[in-house]
Length: 426
Ligand code: AMP
Ligand code: GLY
Image (cartoon, rainbow, N blue to C red):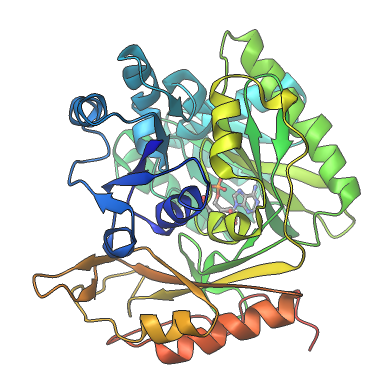
């Protein structure tokens, strides 16, 4: 099989890497890919935009592509699956209608309420004055969310009413583009977050190992929110009891309610959950795709060939497969970011030491990297590398990942030193 992976992040490098370990997959084409996917054997980059559906379909049809795996939410929300399926291609990822579960927080909230999925109490507003008077009545802390896709920047957890008001103004002043037509205001939940990504073919739902991300830029979970600074799996906070509840109260209800709306949802359904200190769970958000960096720790633990699972989802025969098999132990990834991220940062810094790190039992998934004209790997984004390791336990996996990081250098490199602090034994 020849497979296209759409996207250019660490998640897509991990998807390509894992697909190439499947006996059936002979070649992966990343569109547009990054410096890591450009350097991997049997993998190549093709410089098309992720929303150039015509270009992607033409490439796929001319080059004997059997399957297209879509990484990011933007092309899914724009209907890449519908477009490519119309051209006769097999695509992993939900339709445009299904992707609304991520692309509109108001739509997702209404779906959760209709389905009886546990979630924060919320109201939706279309103008600032009404939103602000609701905030005033509720008091802080309170959470303000832009409705549409905002690259992870549309949510403000406001600790004061003034902060919430400022967030409401920013949204209605169009700071998030079309993400600013509605605002969702919801109760602030406390607890620990966990990501449960599930494979589904629209009928059967098979959760992957639960993972925990570290969203804040600073150690001790301080500072600004980012796309994710590190992750580990399996997250012990998602106990078997919690996972059973996620299956019946979250995933099954979501898929059934999507079906009742005529949406045959196939792909990844990602539930971002808050587990309260007394062990209760609520859904913070749904995503219609693999998480980043969660995928970078889930896939190294996966023993079943990924392409078998993906094809079974696309062909609606996931229920015929044996249970998903996992490796023993634990996985951890630490993100090396450009200095200044998630604010402004410079690009084009030469990265050294990746080969030495990989010789020391880590896998380095590239995120914001590219090859320059001298064929050197240089930085090309905020999150640059995901230094990933598996071990018999978390201590081992984390120690290996941090040891790998010691070899890697680029100007301004920043990483959190406390990834996995909740699961470390010391
Ligand atoms: P979302 O994109 O909706 O997941 O929000 C991004 C991040 O904002 C989440 O991962 C949480 O850290 C935080 N967040 C979202 N909703 C809430 C909430 N109701 N209470 C507390 N934190 C929240
Ligand atoms: N790691 C968070 C996300 O993928 O949305």
